[in-house]
Image (spheres, rainbow, N blue to C red):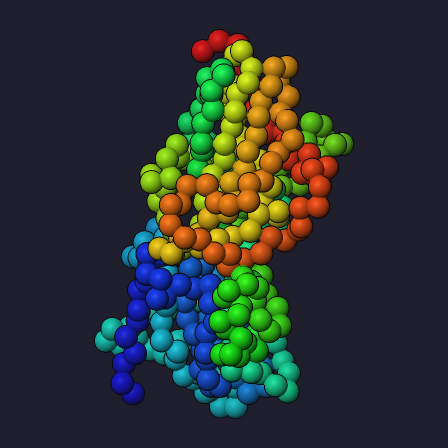
Length: 317
């Protein structure tokens, strides 16, 4: 068999973004790596199989921020059962081992393809800056934090639906799987062990300029404006993002971002209600929605729980 040459794509290549429709003939499987997450999606007779695993960063020879997309590979038959492993390495091919569990989705009609759609985390994400940040009194800053996305998998996507799906940011077909690109640790967000909710914890470099953000295929960037209206410097210990209420946009250059978020800190240590902007903060190029928010923002009472940035005033530097 003629060797299949693997394609390595980055988020700067708009011709090979991963949030799109994939055509996959029966009897083939698709290998791709989105950041540290490897996916193998197989189209078999009357069923689909999806396997996911994590990359060992220390053993990987490829930058984890890249999108690695192989051409469709025929499923290897072993007796009467198909084997969900890639073909043997050949010239131009890489070994693509998967250790994750295989999930099977059966039906009489399996369609002709699938679609991948990015979505924000299903809980708030508490971003902890690697270094302490202070906002001077009477001033404001723009911080740009990056968090990992989840991957929604839709089956039975048709080619005719791909254009409308891309325009609306909604996946066409049957939603069958949701895969986090990074396993975040749990954390509690609240003023006490009784009042609050469960969220995720993540480290961030909290860039002060959008141009300094390092874009990766599995990460989405949120611009946060913090206004310190108090008379003392404000120390930011951690930043709680209302992830379920944010849409995901893609720039014309292929980078993922969300709407901006605005918070004001007033004298007495209390934040005003959190405000979600109507547009991304940072990109100067055109942006389009590629992933809808998990929850609709109905009124300000919904996001009041997120108004605690879990930060505090600093009386002296």
